[in-house]
Amino acid sequence: MKWLCCQLGAREHFAIPRALYRLGILDHLVTDAWISPSSAFSKLCGRSSKLQNRFHGDLRDARVKAFNSSLLFFEMLSGARDSKGWSKILDRNQWFQRKVVSFLRSQLSTLNSQLVLCSYSYTALEPFRCAKANGWKTVLVQIDPGPEEERIVAEEAARVPQLAANWQPAPPEYWDLWREECKLADRIVVNSEWSREGLVHGGVPAEKISIISLAYEELGVGRRGALQLQRRYPDRFTDERPLRVLFLGLINLRKGIARLLKAARIMREEPVEFWMVGPVEIANASTIADAGRIKWLGAVTPNQAAGFYRSADLFILPTLSDGFAITQLEAQSHCLPVIASKNCGQVVENGLNGIILDEPSALCIAGAVRECIASPDRLEKLASASGVRDKFTIGALVNQLQRLGETL
Image (cartoon, rainbow, N blue to C red):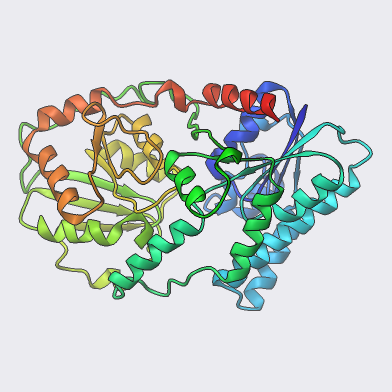
């Protein structure tokens, strides 16, 4: 049974289509943009373009359908209309679905009649309707815990309105369309127990849900890290050589940033600095001058991110809710110990390669960081046990998808 994978964006470095291709069962990858590094399109975009990651060498010989020109036209039109926020998200999702369905209809005579159509949440409804009309199986890859996650973020926004910026809940239409996707899905894949619980709480039948962890496997990355780093820490941390704690990702309330900033204020007199790397999506970030030793480092390229992973002493993820949070694996691939909440993929083994927070509160965050400041030797042991475990590799994902396919 062949699979056709529909994917808006480069989620997880195209891990699922890469795994399906390795199995020999990927019929097509259908995506919004696919830009070979050697193409004229790539040179036109420039090295700093976000579209530069819309390619993976593992799929260079796969059948890929992309809508590069249409995507650029959509973005230009959106800019001209000053479309933003949820309006633009809904428009983009609908645009992609129309392009996918048009492609599917043009290929009906050549597509395998025994097909699995795999699509990511919020862009799956129209492709699923087309699939069902043709007797195909459908797999929905759910990227987050759904409405339950929105409830958690809404509570946080109400708790710290001074940081909430212009956060708005999704319009009812967004969730109505998603519920239709869930109804049409033969199987729903989530990446963590946390997401499974969120979906069940939101009314999704538990028997539809399968947990498949994300995979992280870039060139040279093995079980013990990309560079086989042997991290060395000072005998003690001081004001001149503080503990360097890295947060990398979207800097927003969902990621627990309000709690992290409060922890930084609590620890303002202690030998620690917090590196905040990523797009800032909170209000008043530039005015938070009393929040301890915080460095706001902005959005970065993948190569720049790797540099921060190498230079940091510790990675922190106090998230309130994440479908998985692949940054945990990126950090482990650089042999970084990780402090993480329980509200994401279960990557950290508490006390072995990191610390799991009892709860993502400022006091718990400060307590965990203080443990690391007080014991550089322990931090070194956590680092020595870090690295991407076998269960989070593409090979493991291949096996899990194969088993899933046998149940459809």
